[in-house]
Length: 273
Image (tube, rainbow, N blue to C red; front, side, top):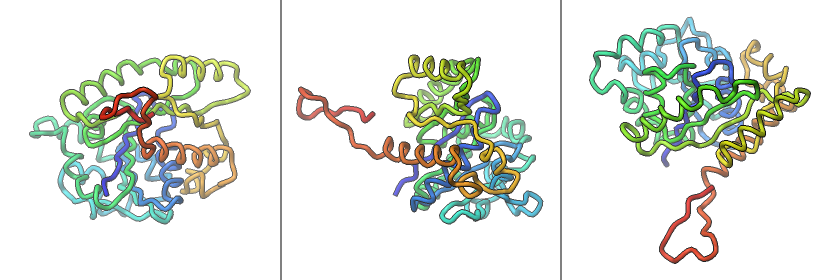
């Protein structure tokens, strides 16, 4: 077994990275997968969203990154069966500076996650809203990247820089890194602009955009204050149901075998959609 390690990244804040990390991981765990979420944002919102008390942590993503603890020590069990968390604290904010003089600093998280490949089916890394050293570590450690993108004006602003960063990481540090897809979030069907954003993104990025769209949903917004994923807080809400559909779509994207078009010569391969 080899885990799919998926970085949730976008240098813009407030696009739904944390909401996606929490609820997509929960949906996949509910399907019987062994899932881990790494809170790699110093704000620690993913940690709070799972109801984990930051005050009594023995280890965190900071201590894991700095080599002060191993993966087993840094991992805590969540209230969701089959789902584990590496929590974050404000100490992670100092890691960018502390790692500057360190040799092979871009590989610290990758090395720390080596045991995860034999334990988990999926690992999600909730990246900070920046393209600094923490995000670079996440991209180097990952097999895939998912980009949450809000259905609002200026949604695609900054995407070109993120794509350049992905390309640089792929060429120089992690040749296996693949763009799993762009996830449209915060869709409000009452807003004509939201549908225009959906159309524009699909026109530019084609099949790299997930079919599933995450709607704006009050229940998803309320869930973190109760220390529970939206799927636990209200599984019937439109937002929770969207993440259940997304989990199914993600598993299909990662497991559907390549289909050879008619007329493809024997001995050649076609890339899966």
